[in-house]
Image (tube, rainbow over all chains, first blue to last red; front, top):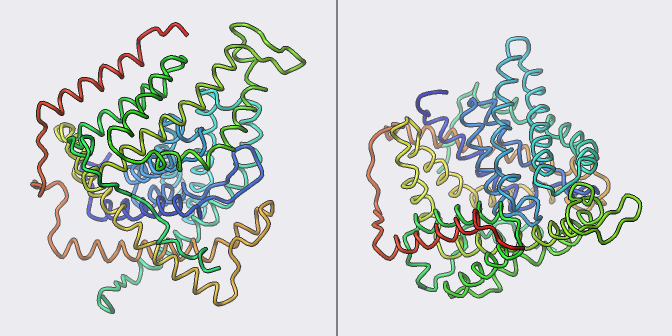
Amino acid sequence: MKKSLTVRDIVIAGVLGAVAILLGVTRLGYIPVPTAAGNATIMHIPAIIGGIMQGPVVGLIVGAIFGISSFLNATVPLFKDPMVAILPRLFIGVVAWLVYAGIRRKSEYLAVAVAAFLGTLTNTVLVLTMAVIRHYMTPGVAWTVGVTNGIPEAIVGTIVTLAVVLAWKQIGKNKKSKISQDL
Amino acid sequence: MSSEFDISRNITIGQYVPTGSFIHRLDPRIKLLIFVFLVVAIALNTSYIGNAVGLILSLYLFWASKIPISYGLSGVKPAIPFIIILAVLQLLFQGQLFSGGKVFVDYGFILITSESIRLVIVSAVRFIEIIFLSSVLTLSTSTTELTHSIQSLLSPLKKMNFPVHEISLITTISIRFVPTFAIEMEKMMKAQASRGADFGSGSWWRIIQRTKEMFPIIIPLFNIALARAEDLILAMEARCYTPGGERSTYSVYKAVTKDYLILLVGLLLTLLLLFYPFPI
């Protein structure tokens, strides 16, 4: 762990946390699918992006913000349980960072894609595991949800993350700030 | 027709109902602490009486804070179908795992026992309790008070090099930017719609189509967010913001005897829910 956060870490974590909250409250982050869980989600993507861009600490913080906001906004009993809603979400960004840091040297694109895929699966697998441990679902139901819901979710997550991260790297290259133009 | 784009108007983050009650005037740190304790205690309690105590307590808090109970009920209402579906699923399929107690129905794979009925009732009631508790907390405490109290409660961790001030700044930035991004998103949705984009009209079972419809909003949203972050970084660095510096705060909370008494009551209730062996 780094000793202290930089200004960049703080701001990026805050802004990505805002996106996670926004996707949750406007329900844009949910894509309705006909399974027991009800929704596929893309709300965990800010946590993955935080992990990839700024390292594990930022990933963890964005994951925590996502978890707490999903806990407070939940309309499903499953996510009104802090053990299910908050705890598993802490690991999304950390896993994404570990994978990204491991593969980065081989290929930047591949690293982002695999990190997004495994980050999403971390979310799905850990939430379902906690749901089984806390007796909201049976292992059989959890497996069905995991396969029918988790796989499309992971694919959607990978595409969105790739698009966002690659676009951001372009922004970083130009070092363009909006301040000089307006505001 | 246009209501589907009115995102910024419908966001109720940090909704605050000022009634000036005794609960509103409590030290926010104490409120937050008791809330965390009680939620953990309720989440781990599995007895009927324990959850009845929790339910009565959360109703009492609504009454004491003079907030109309309709605020709490509006959180429960959309969840009723989910509660029923979950209850049916649990009743049908969880019997094998909770085979203790009296057996009521044993038909093929369906096994309904007194333990599985307990599970169904307790998880539904627990859900309602937690909704009520979190509504009381957020309706009687402003977001500024909440972030300040998080910072103050975590401050002992500073000695272990835990970035307390930074965490609270991150929370503040997040909450501050939600409405800003909502406005940006509204603009983008209108811009895309005026070009003929179609949101949310695809049938709900066509997953891939619904996902694709979201792309023209989600990806610019992230880009705008990150561009704003660049601006904010520049602005903060230009003003010589240094993480980890010593800072004082504008508002200082001071807990008085009344607050400590309430904390003691909250702790006793938590211990009661966690450790007292309720008969049923």
